[in-house]
Image (tube, rainbow over all chains, first blue to last red; front, side, top):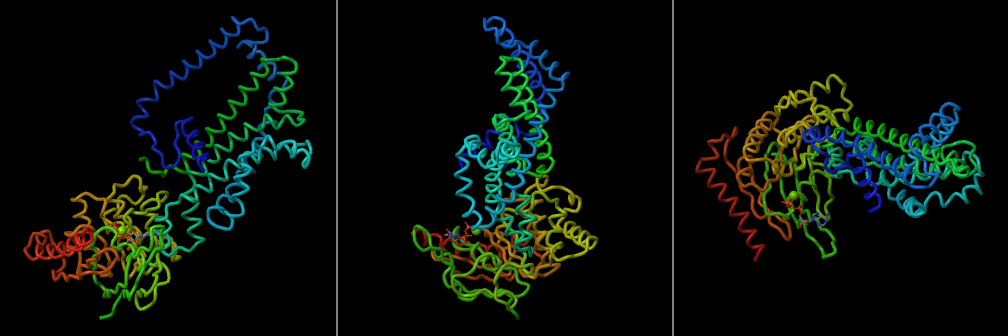
Length: 281
Length: 258
Ligand SMILES: Nc1ncnc2c1ncn2[C@@H]1O[C@H](COP(=O)(O)OP(=O)(O)OP(=O)(O)O)[C@@H](O)[C@H]1O
Ligand SMILES: [Mg+2]
């Protein structure tokens, strides 16, 4: 439980959004601080690249990739289509594993929060597997699912599921009892309370869990492609490493970072839209 | 006259790590149809427990609670409850909040809209129908909660310190507003408060409770006519009643401390 809290905080700190119930910066103050921040973003980006470049030039490691080499590798990857193919393979895996994981985790989390029996049956397993990195299961997964696509997706699914199920569970547990009572005294039965109160009230938690799950899915995809993949960013980086093609590895890192970032922002947009009713305390 | 609420020999006990807590011990109270009862007493004397028993949100350890002649077995739309923490659904607009209970009664959309709007108008929130709770002040939220409870037209209104979090001026306005609405529809009301002045101003009878174990120590009739006005608050009669209630609360609080 403390772990999911920490995860939630990590998410909330990394992008300036907040965990449910935590303070959100006042819109007034935000406006004043936003502008200089944009410049700081640009500055730190330029500075970072400059330091990287200098480091690559000054150090006498021939394998250290410089920014132009990486750009060249990017262009090469684009023009021969390999980069897009690899990217698409990874994105597909991430999306399928993530969507399946979250789609199973949300109902499971709701069940755990709502019914004692479901909690009793599921929680020990969830708590146990949460402490085992999904990657550690790869050898076993290969035994049962082989080395094809299902094995890779399963590992990603597991990572996404485990990140999201406890957040949903916590969300349900955290629903304000007064809101449930308020619905009951207005004549709502259990079913109505579940649909009209518990689901909307736990949405903020679910979103936090979903975003952590997306991160987990990306974190897992590269490793999952160690299982005999033909395509994929992880696969691409791995073979680049065998050929000592370091610029290509950097290309892979940048692609994964960018895609993860873009998908997280899309989720954030959806979150803002659906949970905008939250009190700004 | 007919009793709207009958509390008959009710006890509510809790087993806790520090032993048995007797929140209510053999309490009996009859509330007549159309009465406005206020419950006062020191913190922890069982006021909320009593109200929640009437609402059907708690079950008595022994004894029984009857509302309109029927034993209470759970909450129902015949008893509206207004909570201290407003308890508005934050994802619904003011209007949708008021509509919530009506929707459960399968009322048609246009009819529902109209009725909800009517009750929002009644509490002076007509123009804020489409505002989310986060856009309303504390007093406005509480008025919205009142409209929501009223809209399902319960025969009884149960209120647990609904004005506790409001400033003095808003509070006085809300009291008048509440009495006005109550008079128009003449429902039975049970209202918890810490504020002795408020207890006297609203009530037909003030029920004074004392703690450990929770019980009723005194019931004080308030023979002032309605509508109650600000001038009444300043009258010697009012001062006298207030002093009696205060002595009742204070006396038992002191006894408890000793
Ligand atoms: N769930 C519970 N478990 C154990 N004890 C409880 C529980 N609920 C209430 N009590 C105890 O019952 C007593 C009465 O509580 P209650 O909430 O009815 O008091 P109250 O008069 O409403 O107080 P306040 O004015 O502070 O709201 C208190 O001593 C409280 O500690
Ligand atoms: Mg109370």
